[in-house]
Image (cartoon, rainbow, N blue to C red; front, side, top):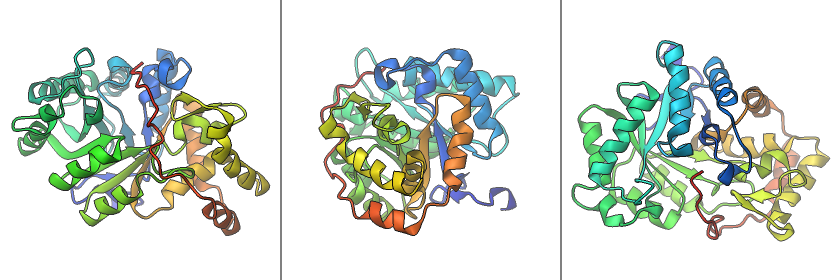
Length: 324
């Protein structure tokens, strides 16, 4: 398909996506998570820049910014008269944030809310989101639960491809083994400093599940640097926590390579990864990301980075989830 040159298919779904996907959680204004505010006009201009770029893939969720991320994307979709041709939106069904319930009924309501907010008639890629935070996991996995409902929506033609987007690998892996998901989103767990998702990624590839690797910058520090941004996976970080980042910095600095370029390309150069999901929160970051993807990084630099010993622990084990 000539229109899909340079793009990869998500499994055998017929959805072709760019090797970079722009994540939009920050565009919903989530200062409790990211440590800074994002106003509406800045967010809208960032979404416009994404639609104008060579990337055809955007990731969002019903609950990012309590719905603001989807609503802001929807505003730009409507002002352009619909989703740009060939563009793929990935979003997620989410729990009720007041009760943490994610049963079959909530899955339907979440999907309906997303369609209305985004201004689209059906989903290209719809994920089950964050099962580790639900009130009762049986509501997700049991008969008539959220997963069954998600797959029913695919059978009905409302959804083209279904995925699982979560953090905790111990919760994700059995679900990926039990259900025929088309894709998964893992975040913060396959980066230059952490490989917690390595086994799960291999299992997914063996099962024909497309891997979408999100948060290659570990919440921002692997883009902004540890001197400017003393946070790691959405939490304030001390020097001990930041020391693996500083080890990476010392190597890339000697080669004159931007830290963000190395973090991004670490994910992009892995053949198991269909697309790398990078958060952006201002228009200029869109082009900067595309520039980082093209920077020539010497083999010797990769060799030195490869000699580092990344953690395999869950980087978010101590995280207190803040939805805003």
